[in-house]
Length: 289
Image (tube, rainbow, N blue to C red; front, side, top):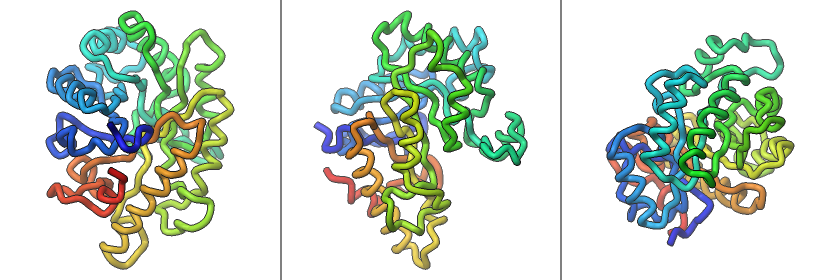
C-alpha cells in the first residue's frame, strides 16, 4: 500500500534509469508513463499495478507514428494502445500550450512556441480539441469508463485551455491537468524557486473555472538552477520544495493527484529524485515511506 496515495512520480519504462523496480517506489501512489506500443511498457504497467501503484498513461508525440493531431493515424494508434493497455487513467497530449504568451507580446505561432518550449508538444487549441476528441472516442470504445484528463497546461493561462472549447462540447474530460513549474509550494518562503512566478495555490485556483478535478501531472525543479552556493544546499532545497509541494497538493480536495518530475537524472538531468548513478538525493529519502 502506498504511503502517499495521491502523489506520484514520472517514469520512463524504455529508459533503464527511469524504470525502477516497483517495490523501490511504493511510497508513491501513482506513476505517470508515456504510452508507447511496446510490450515492455505493458509489462511494467502490470508490475506497478501489482504493487498497488496506479498508472496514468499519457499520449505524447512519442506515442504516435505521426505527430499530426487528430489524424487517422493518431486515431488508429489510440485504439491500438487502448486494446493493449489498461491503465487507471489516461492523459491526452503534453503541454499543448507550451510557450504561449498570454500578453501577446511574443509570437504565439506553434513554430515559435515550439522553439521556446522544445520539450512540449505544442499545437493550436483546435488541434488539442481534435486530438482529445478522437483519442477519447477510441479509448472509450474499448474502455467505456476510462478516466481521461487534459494535456498538462504549462503556460499558466487558463484562457488558452478555454479556447479549445473542450468544456462546451460533447467531448467529456474528467480532469484538468496543470504543470506548475516555477511556482512556490507555499505562499511565503521558497524564494530560491527557479522562476519564482508565484504561489502554486493561486495558479491552481485559476484552473478551477472549468469545474473539473485538477491533476498536477508534472511538478519539479532543476537542482542546478537553484540559486544557492553549494550542491548540498541546492539538493536540500529540492527536498524541502518537494515535500512542501506534496503537502500543499494533498491538502486540496480539488486535486486528484500530483506527480513529481522526474524519478532519475538519467531521464532529464538535474530533475531527478535520484542521481544519474542511481544514488538517492535527499528529496527521495524525504518522501514518507
